[in-house]
Image 1 (tube, rainbow, N blue to C red):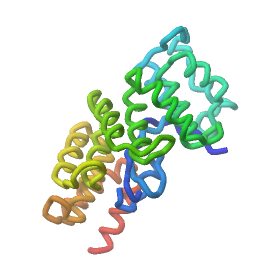
Image 2 (image 1 turned 120 degrees about the horizontal axis):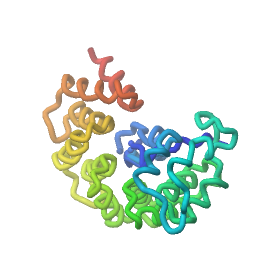
Image 3 (image 1 turned 45 degrees about the horizontal axis):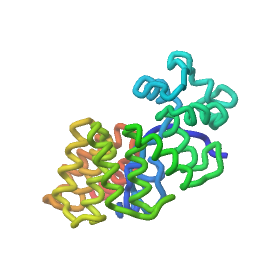
Length: 256
């Protein structure tokens, strides 16, 4: 089975859905999407669990104290960096109503990490968490509607959930709305509006936003083409470890 990389609802393909665009830069490979759709999806890492618990404490009878939920409780052999999740320990928390772990379980089903892959189950768990206000689940659920994964493709519903996530200042949702404008998904294609959304995410220091802006400058979409500006933005993203930015920067540097 695959390793479970719990990130959230981390970060961008042919159409990036930052759960990462028709840029054919499979951001999705790093951020949890397929090769055709680049969307920015929040992936959850074991290291994120402590923060998630403090962000969204136990609900609906889940009495687990966040300080007692050590990382090793969720890895089968107590080696979070190299093992799959112990779904048997995570599921009760999700079923108890904890939105964070509902998101975690949704992510596991979306990518077959520790469970049999099922987009339908992913959507079910994302929806439960999203309806409780989890910004990461809202973003990932929007990606499901954008791609038609586990639900019928519906751009209006995708935008609805992205807006909910954006209302909580979640940068990946901002990027996903930008991608909708960049690729004309449910809206009139508008590169300038896409740039505006990317800039919103940039203000939150999103490494993926630097990539998105860099691509617009590289291809001259809605802005004057500028290899210099493209290189600057892509380098910022690449320096933060974003693989698609490293690839794009490498291609751009070949032009020197």
